[in-house]
Length: 313
Image (cartoon, rainbow, N blue to C red; front, side, top):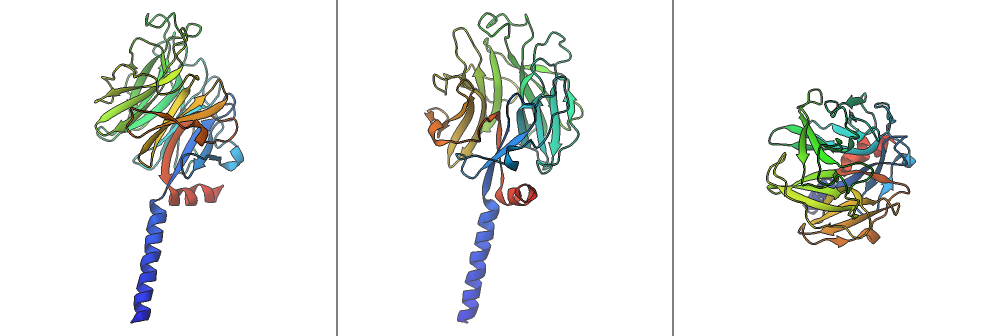
């Protein structure tokens, strides 16, 4: 009887250990280096603070679409189909963006060039596209920053060399057909680098105030109860006196961490909050591979990561 009880206890402990392993989370970071010439890079972290490159910091995917054939600002999300969908900036002065998908982040589909701003032939740029999946409508929203010369007067004199960005979007269910591009966010200032997070019943749009004169170059938050419209004026800055761009965020241990590129200082930073109102700079607590430029962070199951990614590298 004692042996049987002991065996049952051991089996129970073993099952608990397996369940604990399967429930663990690993955090991934898609980023680029240099000007984005060599494509997609990936890093991983167990705690969201210390980040290590994968594949010896070599590229996972070489860009082949667009005029300039760059892969800047890679944004990856996992859809309900299990596929990882990625969009990226394919060049500095283009009217389209890159797109590809993967099941394991290693083998990628044929790359596509999505001409999201072709209907506006004077468009100067299509920067930092991001993805968000809406469970209610089963739609993916792709959104980005573009400048259409003369379209907006507010902020036109305060930007960099004729750039006066606003955020635009399109939606799709299958990445084959897309709704007509529409204006997404305009609050009378120069704005880039938006990223959406649904928290409770509210949508939070983290963004960069791109105003140059007088210089802002900081991160702020706009809020809405609707995904595609109704976003508020931007909050006060959540970042410091340094210039910051490319926000991406994770929810770890009841805290929200917003990571960003301190691009003039050539390093990465982060701020943390438990209530999305009061923010604490934790830049001294995070570490990244040398030379990382911004992209997107996302979470996967540790068991899947070990079997499908680490084991194949």
